[in-house]
Length: 551
Image (cartoon, rainbow, N blue to C red; front, side):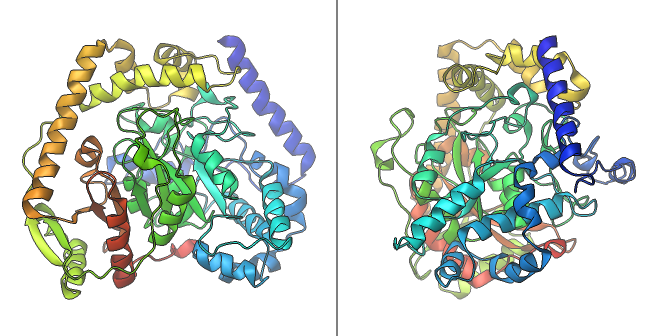
């Protein structure tokens, strides 16, 4: 282990030396965090009491090192001229612009890399949203241009040529898949199944987004959005005012600040819904089993799913479609997943029965959203969910992760990874806790001591999932609901356990400027109902605003 720690130090120092040779005045310089940390220590929300902001082990200039020559020839004037054509634009709008030869796929990808460098090099605007960029990202974009120029017809609703950021627990060849952890810093794994699907659709895999380390099942006192490799992700609507949500923090932040066209997150319980709603983005948490998890660093094979985080409902549907496909390696996928595609269609709200959680009606933004539905002929039905016993939820996740992480490390991790399971992750981190676990690793410690037999774990799983399904099934059946309306990730736990998909959509901002999302929940494999109603709500509310400092 000491040898590995030394190698990591050599790698970081070597990178720094190479960067010093490559540029006399590199764009990013380590920031003095002391003033900002002192301010954060006085924040009324203890979750914002960050102990550090920048990663202690990564020189951020390595992000764009492979693209320095291209960026030197991409002028500030060209960037400024492209910004109105690209920022906040949907997939369809970008495809239309490219079809009109306003810019190329290569310029689109270059725009985002340039913008990332501009944002992350600015001490007043950096977000720590991205951990790595694929060195061949522009080659992928050039290949897309070549295909287009050969006369191939490209659908306006295609991810072809669109730069996508993946949460850094999703495998992509050519760059490490780290889950934000130093233990996986050299995990040069193969493409995850959904990554292969995106590539087959012609998408440009731009890079990897930061995340709450180990998808936030790691520590108890650490803030959401922190990882040892990526540092502390910050919210573009108020970097030192609001949290990012997690664990797909970088995915939510990056799409909100327009650092990619779309992003991919993952969720076990709230990890798409939370960062999407916290960053005024759209997040789709699909039914577990509708998208493959093969090649994704796991928490729980019972609950894990990948899913889109985007700026529009239509982009979420298109991104889902590009990732979909039946994966025989993922035993959670039923045959209904084969060929599953979401449609963009205009379905009236008249006659739709929407469940209103009475405990949230005092929220002003929620009440305004209900008024929009009511004014457009939807039927609002008051719902009070039955009590649900969630005791043992942490143990279920811990028992699953013990088994599922070991399986991932055996089947997917590259030879350079030295850990094989939870106990070795714990040992690795304890060798240098100030660098590797500055907030501790309480949940890793819990898992290292957890002893659940297969039978006990199965019983716990059945009790929790069965109880959650009973509560939601009862509400949907008795009230004949199309969807249930919630806020942010407030109902994420019960939806996850019941395996109900959910879609969160920007519904506005509090007086302080904090983004809030309206979250729609539907029965298993009813994602189309979420999209149909979500498209109508998005059109009526038009709530999303670009963060002021990221125009």
